[in-house]
Structures are given as structure tokens and as C-alpha cells.
Image 1 (tube, rainbow, N blue to C red):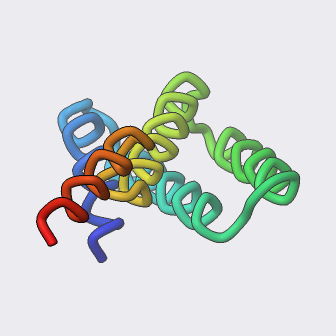
Image 2: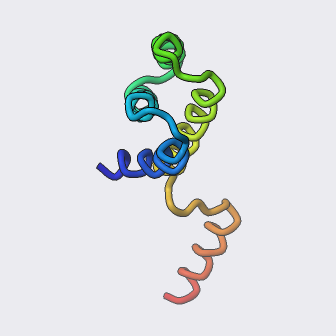
Amino acid sequence: ERCLRVFKDLTDPMLVGSGLAILKVNQYRWFVQDLAGLFRAKAGLDLAYCLEGTLRKWFEQGLEPNTMQFLLCEVYKRLKQMSAPPFESSPSEVKHGKKEAVATR
């Protein structure tokens, strides 16, 4: 549910006020949902093959290629941010933290 809300936040400001018909707005929403599903379920060559099929399908449905490319990049970036650990420390920070922990005992 959280993931769908993130993508609704992505598509709604861009598409709702654009003057597109409701059907076209919904097609872009479905396109984004398809992409998110692929990025979560596939990897490697399987992902590339499925992405190609998805892009072809939605292009044939009449979606604009530049908008599709933009949405593809945004979905990838947002999913990458959502799956990244909240804090990554460098090896020097880890060593420093261990030294402090030993010194306080």
C-alpha cells in the first residue's frame, strides 16, 4: 500500500492537471504499477526482457515515449530509495564506533 501511495504521488501531480482524458491518466497509472511490479519481482535479463515487453505494450496503447522514459527512471529511483538501508556507515566509522564501545566498558 505504501508503494502504491508513493507512485500515486508521482503520477497525480504530473498527469491530473495536464488536461489528459481520464482513460489516458489511468493508463499512465497502470503503466507505473506494471513497472513497479517488474522491478520488485524480476532481475537481470529476465527484468530486461519483461521491461521491453511492457514498454512495447504501453507504447502500442498510445502512451508518449518521453513520458514513459521519465516515469521508468522515477520508478527505479524511488524503489531504490525505498529498499536502501536507512543508514550506511563507512568502514572508518565502524572501526571508530568499536573503539569507543571497547573504551567505555
